[in-house]
Length: 177
Image 1 (tube, helix red, strand yellow):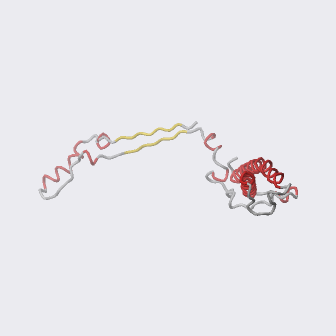
Image 2: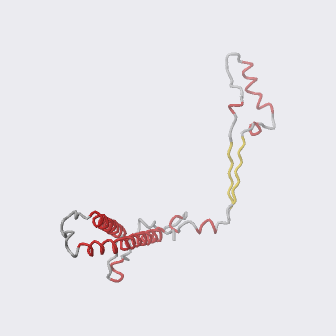
Image 3: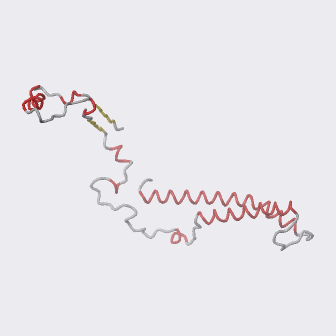
């Protein structure tokens, strides 16, 4: 664990010397030359000194720093390296769906499900594909309403899961995991 000490001093004690003659020399010079003006030390002209000291074991402080960011390292940062050809398509032939496709499908499905509920309660079909007098009107709208909301929730869950996986992969490439 690193320990740090900070000292802040704004008093005149830092401006004192062991020889008071050196402090009085500018005032004596001002007395000899009556037209020369020497600024007098006022409380607003105090010096502010900040001293900081840090002590650490070295080992624990370095474990959070990636190897490419350490001083003297010849390793290139992850964004400067090549991808290495390790993509999801080459691993097993499966194409990985990006998170925004899941999110878009979730939004469209939720809109269709809620729209089906509104259309059924209203009793007037918006697009007129299936009329209210058709025996398939209620089952079709019921199917969209009953299956659409859970499907939308599942697609949203998959979008979040895929986005988290992509973020962890990027952190691993950057050297943070």
